[in-house]
Length: 431
Image (cartoon, rainbow, N blue to C red; front, side):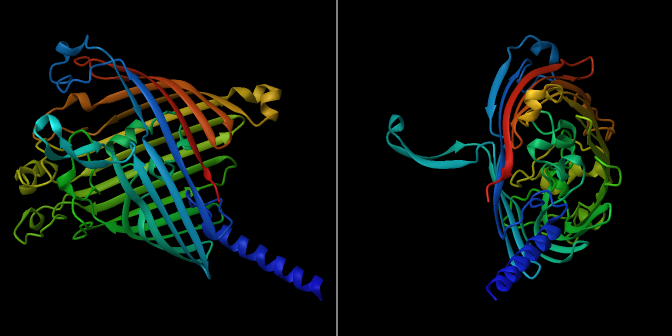
């Protein structure tokens, strides 16, 4: 009797674990979690020496700054904590708290050198963001509904943004320039996996055109200076990945929504009544892992309607508004990139047996957040070609040490921008 009871308990435990694993399949955050409580995260530490000017007029007066000294930076781009819990019966919860660039902080200080005057000072630049916060109901492996603050998986970088998913010290520059990264918004998602396909469709709060810029296109579109995300307009996102070929994943993704008029307060006679600010983004990407190679690539193209009208929107001209962007915004933007790395330690038996890896990699990308001139205005320094090469050393599967030399190639009018970057990153679950 005792043996039968023990067998039954083990079978139930195994079934629970299997169901939870199926519910999480394809989810980049919780894909390897098999216990009810999950705790994990990732983080990056970076050092850069940039051998070009950091002066504010380096593009408007390039000749005056071609011999400026180099400058260096230490940074913690991202430090992330994952927390998740499986309530059972198909219900689960997930959250991701991100500290960018070391977080942020202010302090009250008494300035003795200024007669004991009290001042409020910014002590630390950076951000603390709730990047994910959702509740999910899983019906089966191919049908899951998730509601809350979720990652928008448009492009390679957003769908696979953890530091072990790219070779460079910092996130791939092209997508990180023209689109939000990591793109996260509040909405509802339907996702699942069926045979060799994983798919996801999302309904989201719309982007805010008041935040669009000439050098970052729609990157700041999801940001809100208010206590809530404005959702007067809406957007939809879709992603499909295929895994038919062993070692190869091919994905297509896209976004569509209106952005003008998605601001506060909603003026019935404002620009939103006349213009739509349609945003359409399409992307194709892939990852191949096999024969000691890792190869990744993506191509993104975006369209923004009524781009020429944004400069004159009320919130961008109002000195009391939190949106004070005076430059024109492009009607189009693009980013293409490819990287490949070969594991040198695969040819060294002692290293291979210890599970260590050393990838020698190269990367090329080209991007432009101002790909089409608006009102004949040119910002030619936004067109960038970038090359990088270096190494990724894995002493453990969850830890990587990165080093690279990179160079941005700008139009001949401007000075090219070489740099050396070194980083250490980890990614994994602790519980």
